[in-house]
Length: 111
Image: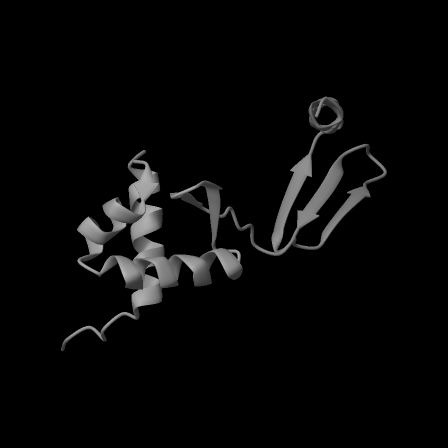
């Protein structure tokens, strides 16, 4: 079974991500060479990706992928009568000893 053909937008976005991951400078010429697309198509796709916030223009003709974090998960902290702590982040639950809780608090306070 053949893979469905990618849109030029996805092709350019993935090329930006790949070049950046390889610590290469992402330029129009590098994207054209990697994708085989014409420079006019590259320019149009780059404009769309910048407009949508998927990539960032760091200087004229140089691009990097935008950092996108997943939505924040719900969090709660419950102190148990014996001094231990239940820390819930999304579906994950950590049980901390009183010392671990203090250590984590110190680490978080030093941001």
